[in-house]
Amino acid sequence: MNFWVLDTATKFTWSETDLDDDKKQADIDNQITNTTKTMIETKVVTQDQAKEYLVDKNVLPREYLADTGRDGKVLAGGDKQTEDSPESKQQEAKARVEEAKKEFSLESQVKAAEKLYEKIKAKYDK
Image (cartoon, rainbow, N blue to C red):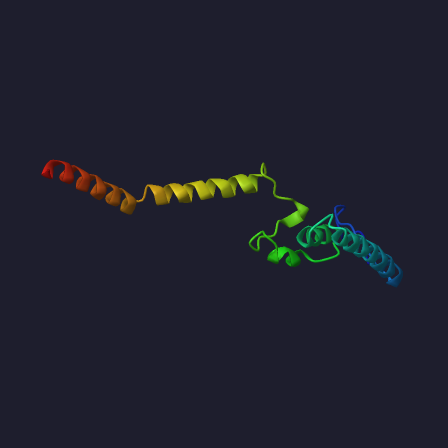
């Protein structure tokens, strides 16, 4: 290959894993799994917490979190959703907007006006 053809920004990299690396990773995964099993048996963590732990340690794929209490939503990049996270604040704001829409919808305003009309009418009909 002629290196004079390529610009200086081009880099070549090589990565290879062999069976020895695979065995080492399998041993690590086995230790993590056994530790998690012990934590479940001693009731230190729940099964859902253990599943999240295994996903965080890359023992299980992220799709395994779809059946936990997250309604099928999986947070990418190992980020945990906390009460102060932007995602939770955004979900909370959306929920408040939807509640406000229901509360101040045209139908609810019409019903409230009809009830008020009936009260006034009943008061003056006496």
